[in-house]
Image: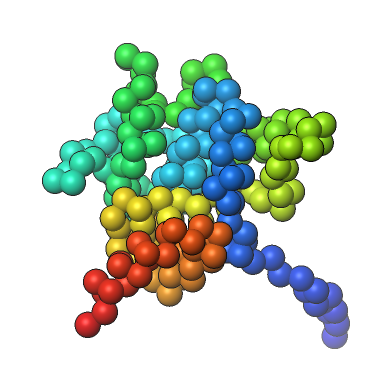
Length: 206
C-alpha cells in the first residue's frame, strides 16, 4: 500500500482582508500614464477582473433610467453582469478615440490581455514605490496589495452609485453575505462611507 503524506497548509491567504485605501488608489493614478490610468480606473471603479477589463467594448454600454450601465458576461464564468457607470467609468467611455471599439486598450492601442492588465497595475505600483523610497513625503503602497484587491475598493464605488448590497454582490460575483463584510472593512478605512452603507441597509430591513 502506497502511503501519501501531505504537508498541512500553515497559511491561507484571505485576499478579502486586503483592500486598497483611497490614498493608495490615488497614488497609483498619480504615477500612471494616461493609458495605464484607464486600466486602474476600470479595476478600482468597476470591480472588473483583468480578464474582463480587456473585453470591454462600447457596445457593452447601455442607457438606463438612472444613467448608463455596462452589460457583459464575465470571462471566467460566462455569467451576465450589469455594472452601473460611475462618473470615472463614464469618463473612460466618453474619451474612447473615434473608431476604436475597445474601452480600455494596451499602451499600443491593441486589445488588452489579462496578463498585461495585471502587469500594468504592478508596474505602476513599483514605479510609485521607487519614488516613495526617495521622497519621505510620499506614502508607499503596501507590497501585499495585488491588482485583484482593487475589487474591494470598487464595491464602495458601486455603493456610492446607489446600488443595494444585493446589486453589489451580483455585480462583483460575490455572495450577499460576503458583500457586506467587505464593504464594512472598507468603511473602517473611509468613515464617510458609513452613512451610505447604513442607508442602504435600512432600505433592506423589513
